[in-house]
Image (cartoon, rainbow, N blue to C red; front, top):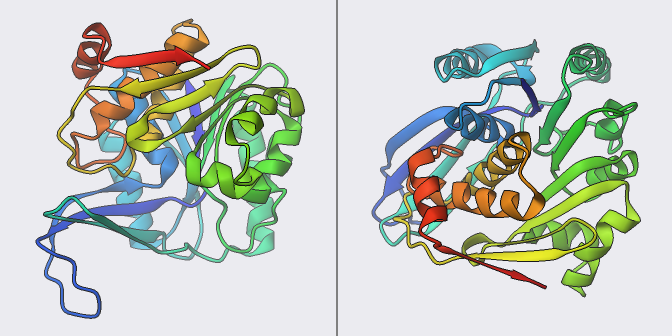
Length: 305
């Protein structure tokens, strides 16, 4: 069983429009409305890969009820902490040209007392899990060291990160099995110069075993502290919605390591799951048969850097 933490859960609505017109009336068509937030997408990918998953985070109001019911329908076990405020709603609008506009609510302001209660709740839960994924930014008002505090005493656990900025830098001091982050967030966290050098240094600078940076359609680069690989997809998928592909990548990585595969194999599998997700409106959804087709068809190029 895998525990996924996304504190700032959401309802993700994906819509289509011929052309999004800034400052004007836009009539959109909703094509998907599901529980969202990075961890919800990771959980969805893991369920598609037949993993058992529990998702932890805040829920509040009618939006929270929608999220909880949606998770249950997808076979994701909800371990949710109630708050009075409504969960956020995020809108992803895709134009006929393929251009995507993301409009995200920032989420509810959670009082310090509730933050402390959630800390105790999560620490009680995580004692029963050896595989833990923490995905997504902290809600407004949370201290930068909140994730770091949650991770105290992680010995014996495989912990996966996907967040950025100061909360990540503080959490990295506690250590992790793997960091997965996109290129934009990597540069915002570690600086824009000497990208490859900084990536290769992470397993030596912090107590982590692996670091992976996703590059969108250009694939991904990752290191285990000894070797550094780049995976470049040549498979041309029909792109319905690119949002959530990075979360599918994370789901693929976690699944690969649970299967006992090595880092190079995990990089290949994660890239294939990410490509598969491009053909769905829902963030994180993947087709295991297509994943196998991508890998077996050698539609991924891998090189050592």
